[in-house]
Amino acid sequence: MDKTLSHESLMDGARKFAHLALEAHRDGDEEVFVLHAGVSFERLMKAALAHANPMLLMEPGVHKEPWLLRFAGVTPVKAPKKDSDLDRPLRTISASQALALTRTAGWLSQHDELDKLIELRNGVAHLGHSKSESSDILAIFARATNQLLDHLHHAQYEYWVDWKPVIEISINDRMEKLEREVRRQVEQARHRYQEQVSKLPDSAVSALQAESYTFPQSLRDSLRGVDLTLGKALCPACLNQAVVAFKGKSFELGEREQREAAFMTLGCMVCQLSLKGLTALGIADVDLMETDIPGVEYPIFEDIFAEISLDEVTAVDYNQWPLDEMAEAVEEDEPLIMAPPSEPE
Image: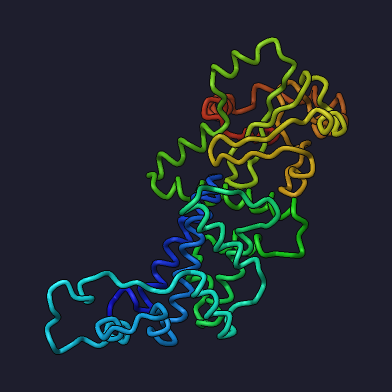
């Protein structure tokens, strides 16, 4: 059988373009996403048809012997004439024809959202890009793909691999639209970060994590004279330090209500995650009270100091603290944990 018509070859191509489509969606390139998603879906439909019978891929009305032999996987004994049909590239049915056949076979639903996916793909390939404002094309693509994978008894995880969490979020109808979009955005940023660090040595990853909370000097200079406070918080996607921007001065941001009213945006320089709005922060499980803001004392510190009596504080002999270890910890930017000095023997 011609390798291009084999079930395995078509499956490999469908998986390849599916991953390319998800990368494009992650990076915000909708035009490339739609094109690759359409190609992937077309190849997966043809893989299902080839699995049943490769002859189903043959264009209607094409009945010449060489074509019949090639689609049937038969090698002709008689040598073909020069410029015969055997020398020409195989032409299979179109995506629309493949969709009609898979629907007739009962492998896909009759919902017109699948036609929209094919139309968008054709629009990008032939006429130019046209955005779809009403439908979540990724969800349509994911659901239809999973339907065909289930029909073929092909494990979804083996097909999507590390994109599986993004797919599960995209087709989860129990989530509201905003929640689905935010959770998908976080998962895509996590995927981007993992893809980046997988190509770096461990030492480079450690350096990247250590310098994750950085701000370009040019941007710092442009913010001079602006009532804007920058803090840092744990990024919900890559767990590095993300920048959190507030309107106003730092001394005005001690209470939760003040921080929520002043919050502008959260952005991670490492995984490129960007969250705006308190609702998005809540969905991503980011607590503004855990944001480290320069010049703001946390209430927890005040509570601890209030529980220590004056006599206990003045009774401590500070000469017994391990000053050398404290200095090293500060230089290495490590958390400093001090225990009370031991009693002299």
